[in-house]
Image (cartoon, rainbow, N blue to C red; front, side):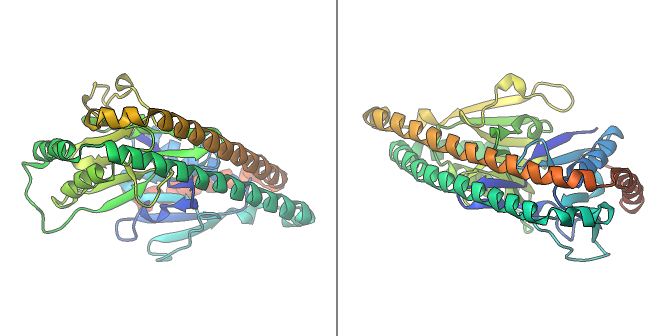
Amino acid sequence: MSVQRHYFPGNNTPLGFYSYYRYILSQKEANRIICLKGGPGTGKSTFMRRIGESFAARGESVDFLHCSADENSLDGIVVRERKLAVIDGTSPHITDPITPGAVDRIVDLAAYWNEESIAAAKEEIIALNEETSRWYRIAYNYLAAAKSVFRSLEEIYAQALSASEIYRTIADIVAREYGAYDISLAPGRVKKFFASAITASGAVNYLTSLAAEMEKVYMINVPTGYAANSLMSILAEGAIYRGFDIELFYCSMSPEEKVEHILIPELKTAFMTVNRYHDVEPWELVSAEGREQEIAFLDMNDYMDSMTLDSNRELLSALNDEYDILLNKAVRYLGKAKKTHLQVEEMYVPNMNFTQVSALAGELEEDLCRRCPRAIK
């Protein structure tokens, strides 16, 4: 059964560009990792998309890893049953071989460009790259300012939360979902990514694609700014200690600490927080087999003291407005960065031999099929 999933391995955050690329495929689990090199406009995204869509057309499950600078571009693909990945190894997510030959291989699209023509545009390319970097710095400054507002929202919701009630609910969920499993001597492995990203188009998420393989989805409604760290940590650790591998998807505003979604593939169970920035309706969740999934609802507002919320209603409204303003300004400057980056790409495109690049993609696909046999489930 072919399942195509979509997510982001990196993100625009208050800390700048934040990468979880090291979790795409570990050296021990991978059969092959292709580190794709080449400048902007050299066809890396198209190259990866062609290979990914070809494997998907054969009925294989493929993860499409999207770029937070432009969600329509790819930063990588993973063909899961074959344990192979093709990833963009250029800035800002520079990736180089760790185990060359045995696992990793560099494919350099620079071999197919007209270097003399590109070099003739050196000054303009450098100027545009510097301008792009400046727009990104401004965007990240606005995200840092938005993070301060985010922290204020967190503080109010933390004050309003009834911890004892939510812990009882979490205990019930842990007993229901994990109770039949013993603590394992070998804890499960953890992977970390982003299900949503702050892009030049605004907030973009791929929750429906991530939920496709799940049979049960807990939809946890949270107000913007609420930090469900304790809840998600307990749910994650409960699975890890029982030996289940999990996938954690982090918040764009708190990429180091705030887990927004948990997937437990072996249990076909997901815990997903939803709010106005990454929303999904229950009827949008359909399993890969076309069946409706079992949906369990949990509303964090039910565990908050209404008097505390009412007394802070005006402040909450003002903070949410300010957060929206700052986030929209960040998006505006991400758009400017995207625009200047596209200008750089346009200077490379005419100087590429895409016929040769396309032929290379076909040759690489054949080589990967031979070297990375598909695992039989």
